[in-house]
Structures are given as structure tokens and as C-alpha cells.
Figure 1 (cartoon, rainbow, N blue to C red):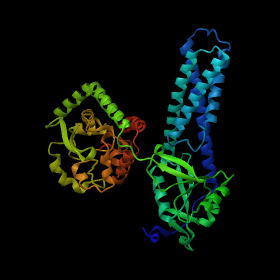
Figure 2: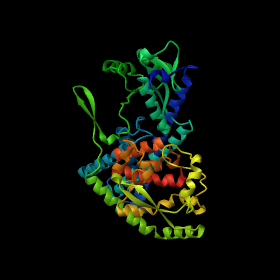
Figure 3: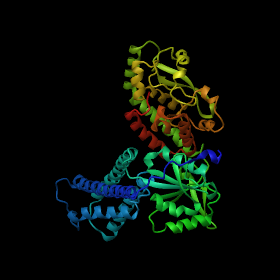
Length: 493
């Protein structure tokens, strides 16, 4: 894309006042204090619960130290362990799995230290009390952090939560790409307030990259930091940003409280596939190839079939009730079979409860002009072909329950890309066709990110991200989030 099309004259100077920064810092400190209070409350309740679960109303015996001392000491030691493991670092709070890993690690490390110390010192503290306290406390901390994060995300979406003010530095095209990426997930809390571009592109008059004001060139990055009152500088790709210039920028930011973040051109690659290796003073990024076969795939298939069999057995009464409702509501078969494309391009019949009238396919041509989505899909919020029962089933995703049989037969997985139609696959280009490297899923990133509300481009991006970065842990996370997406009925129509 030519640079001339990216730059436009600015109509006003970037809005940045000291008050905005002060307010952001106050929100940050308030959130950190709330997290500390929340952790202390959870740990206090966990220790108290461990005491009553182990001793009930009886007086504990055989302890060299009274529990009125042990309990508060355990809570304080636990909070100190969380602090030492940097569980209150604002760079991990509110986004990503690292926050949960640190909380879990701090709890397990403390549990190990207490067990070893108790054994060596021969202190008679009940192991049942400690076991219950650590189990309940660790789970409680993770759940509480999850709840606090969701509250923070909702506050950020409403413009009231603590967010980072970001200055993006790089070539015009890369700056726009990074801005677009950060804005895809506004709940992550990175608010771009300005950009610095190469000196040669800076015109005599103020410019904008899209709606982002250009506040300086590479020669004046530090001045732009002061002007915009940012707390984060995100550096993206540019031929003029040499190692020497970046090192000097890091020196300039020392002691200012401003974070320096490097955003490589490599995108949509999950953390576990990335490893940094220092070679000759250079932090080389090693990217592991995606895994499409092997032991983990065998385990995934076993888990899929086991869970689908158990779910079908438990859901039989629900399936029977839905089948009866469909039969009474409109004429036609209960189960709708449709040809979809699976792993490697093989076709199979996907099973769903029928939610439309029997002649839905013939009516489609009359509704094409009312398509509310882009790309290769047809979506319509008030689709007249959907029956009364079908509308209810779609709202709660109950129409997809028969796909458990597809999972049991090995055609699908519980988690994976959306199963495409043959007509869609016929128009795939080289990149989109990578969706067929894995089995399609009953749910996936597309399901937990908005379903029908997603654009075609975003849906494909999420599917490709899953294909490249799938893992058993990610599958469990997606299945957990699916319940929330179904309950909230996001994008279901």
C-alpha cells in the first residue's frame, strides 16, 4: 500500500493532558489494591475453611504452635509468595495465561516449602488442614483473578477501566497493522494515542495514520513520549530502527516508568511455540512448527470420543424432548443432514436438529440480497425460514447437540475450526485452505468470540490461529468459555 494513501493531514493536535495520565495511574493503583484485598480475603477464607473442615468445633491437639498463630502466618506467607512470584506485576494483570500460572506457581511453591520445613523442624501442624487450605486457596485465587479480569475487561470496553497509553513507533504500514491488531481486542487495555514514523515520511504539516495522530519522527521519540504522556512505547518493524537506535531509546526511557515493548512482524503465533535464544548478543526468536500429528493428536482424539460418548448418554432425555418439540412445531424430519468438508478435504454428513422449514434451501435465493455478513457465508438475524422452536434452539446452541455423534464417529472434534460447506471450500485460496489441516469442531475460537457477529475475515483469522496453535490446554479453555458464550447468546441467530 503506498505511503501517500496512509497519511492524511491532521485536523487537530493529539488530545493528551496530564489529567488523563493521572487518572489512568489512579485506576491502575486502585485495581492493584483491589487485587491484593481480594487475594487476602480468598486466602483468609481458605485457611478458615481448612481449619473447620479438619477440626470442626473440636479443639486441635498435638500442635506445637497454636492455630491462632499458624493461620494468620500462613496467609501472610502466602501473600508474600504471591509478591515474590510477581503476581502483582501490572504487565501480567488482566490479560494472558501468565497471571494464572504465576498464582498457581506461587501457591505450589509455598506448599512445598511448608511441607519441607514442617518435616525438617518436626512441627505438628495438621497435614489435613494444610492440604485443604492450599487446595481451596489455590483454586479460589485463580477463580477470583478470573472474575476480577472479566470485570476489568467490561470496564475497559466502557472506557472506565485502567488501560495503557501507547505510542507506536515504526513504518507507516506496520504502525497501522499494529494499531488494527490492538484494537481487535480493546479489553486488553492498549490504547494507542500517537505514532512516530521515519523522518523521510514526516511532512511539514501534522499528519495522521488513519485516525492516529503522528506526533513525531524517529529523531524525536523521547520528546513524543513526554508530549503524549504515554506509559508504553511499542516498537514495530522499520528499516531505520537500528539496534543502536533501539538501545539508546531504552537508555532514554530508564527511570521514567515507561515500558518499551517490541512488536515483531510475526503475528498469530501462540506463546508456547515461541522461544527466545540469545546468540551473539541477539535475542533470536525460534518458532516451532505447528503439530498436526503425534501423541498429542492421539490423546486429543481419545478425549474427544470419550467426552462425546459420555455427553450423548447424559443428554438422551434432552435430545428426546427437543425431537418431540420439533415434530410438534412443524412438518419435516427432526434431524437435518448437511454435507460439510472435514480434515484433508473429505466430505461427511453433519447432524443438527432441524431449525428451518423443509424448503429452506429453495428460499435462499430470494433472501440473498438481505445477507448481513461478508465473505462466503449467509447470515440474517431475522431469517424467515427459521421455525419457532428453531429460534429457541439456535439461541442456546441446542441444535448442535447431534454433532456429538459426528465427534464419536471421528468426523469432527469437540474443538476446532467451523465445518465449512463444499461451496465455501471451492472458493478457498491457499491460506484459508489451511483450515482443513485439522478436524472441524463443535465449538472453537469463532464460537467464543462472537459467532455470527464476526466478520468473515475475523472468523478465518481465528480458525487459522487455532490450526497453528492448538493444544489440549487451549481446548479445555475454549470448552469452558463456550458455556459463557452460550449462556450470553452472543452472536446466536
